[in-house]
Length: 259
Image (cartoon, rainbow, N blue to C red; front, top):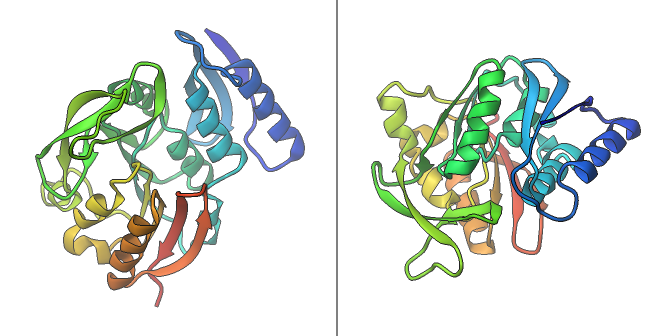
């Protein structure tokens, strides 16, 4: 297993080191079987477990180099409890740890291979735990979920009649309000969400607690879904603070409840 050390930061030299890491451990083409253990200087997250896989590299560039969630620096408060819905291998949670090292993070990731890496990372980090569930609007529902042996990104809930070349597994969905009622999670200060088109279902699963969450940062995956998310959040008292294009279809939406 390769072992390297780097420092996450804003300096040009820091980004060069991260780019070298991307080039050496993942690069521009996928290859299988390798794992990378990275030593970091991030408080509460001293080790980062990665895979030799192109999507992991792409996600690392998006989250750590391009800093897709840098809008969170504009939060008017410091969150102490965070839900990471669509945790993947934990790179989003890792970035959150760089901003809020004392926060308790609960991650949700239904894909078995991603959940394995997420658990490996959370085991090394303070105040983190994970559930292998999807988040939706029907508690306990069994959802058709797309995974692929040669892809480690883009897993998603399958719509009616949809499959393509994805492999199908069944995952159990939970409503956030049900998890809160059962005492498994508390009402979070901040929710980060990237779930490839299921964001409206997830928001509806918060029920009345949607208005109690102080901030959301989420990626939406169509214009229609984006507009629906804005309606749900503004109806719950949130103000849109940032709305940035991520790709032709995807946008990153940042909202906060402010007086």
